[in-house]
Image (cartoon, rainbow, N blue to C red; front, side, top):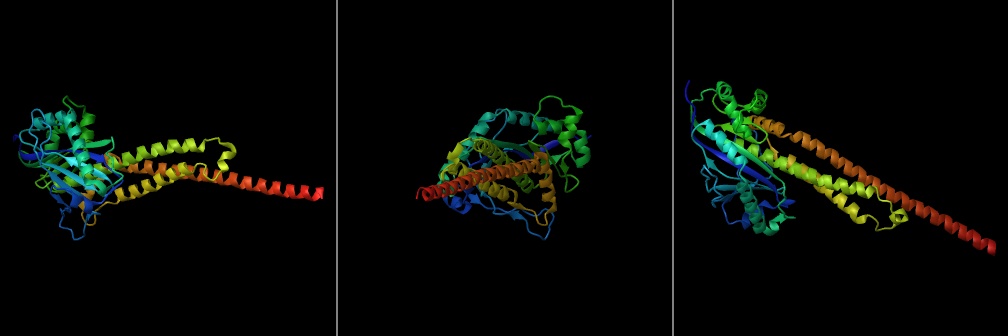
Length: 364
């Protein structure tokens, strides 16, 4: 059996942040001093139909070295990607060579490395501050989504994807899960079941927190996986925002303010906040879910569907849609209640005026 060895590749630790409501990418490109590009994906299949980001994200290259990663070399090249719907991703590069055991050790080390995450947050925060007015409602949220792409671009000892994955199943699963110890057969099967190949030798394994890519040109594959994680972060952030909105909406709905509720300004600010959040959430959900179009590029579309399944994007989308509907229902109930009480007040005012007129007539 031929010994497997990695000749060339990179590990790309990825961190995704929510940084604002929206980003003017053209204005951001003018403000940054680092090299910035708006690349498009390439066609893997030579298909005629177009596919693209709408609009294309802004990619900014930095050459400041990150914090040391004990036992591994961290390249000074760092890439930050800005999306128009207010998200930013940052990825590092770690050169790869050696064996699958080395990959497994790196995967474990990355899961335990906090300085890399702190450095990523600091870089993104500094960039958003430098962009100034190009970012609407700026602010780097506490939530972060991390993902690790292991890209092998040159290797020996793997001539066919199927037998190779079967022969090294446990080691590959440990790379994907970042586990130092042995895994159960069920865990191994779950880690390796999402696999996609274009040729006989290349393949991509997608897990919920990492991916293993054997391909001489992995850039497009990584970009698709990156975007799926950006969507996940945005959906998680939307979900937390809607949770707070629902809590406030329930409080508003349960208020017992008596006849104060018929006053013109009663609950106006609460209702305004609910309606604003509802509109903002619906707009952001639409922009996030429709930013990447696959028209004629079936291979990348299949990869995206696989990643979306592993990250449970459809379930997150369904939860957010239901919460938006709940906010709409509560908003409608509160406004209907206020309108009903105002109508009751008007009715009683009319009755009192009629009684007053009758009283005056009887006195005369």
